[in-house]
View 1 (cartoon, rainbow, N blue to C red):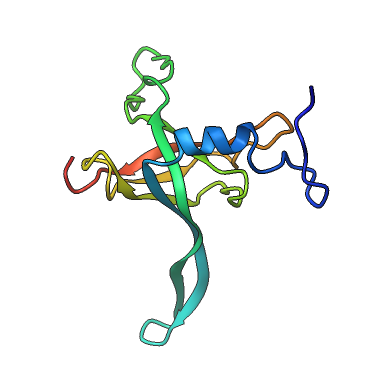
View 2: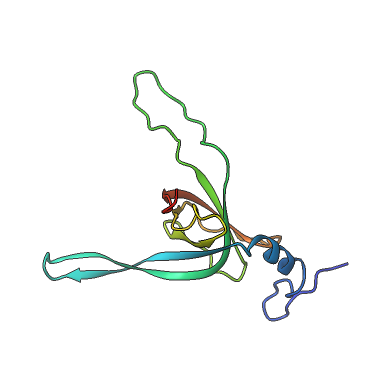
Length: 148
């Protein structure tokens, strides 16, 4: 048995396993992926400053904690930063654009009120591959939501 594919894109056809997974996993949250906007000239300072972020995607998604902190090796007498801020995974439909390193992810809507307003920085470009049913992106928390 093979999975039917869409001839125009080569992706699995709608209505197959992808739509089932999206309906189950990606129905509880809405996320926004933003990219840094182009630099703009500030006439008062005479300097270029970062422009407003540009929304690359807003739609269904899901985030979850990906586990505890990584391994930290402490050298005697050397200061180190505790690796305590959590890493998270973002799941988006395959039709969503691939998030790039440094993009910002915001939780716009969620069943969990503490999640709304949280923002994350993308650590690596979103994962792609032939066996994917949702896109996975690694993130690090940047700001807790209003209720957290």
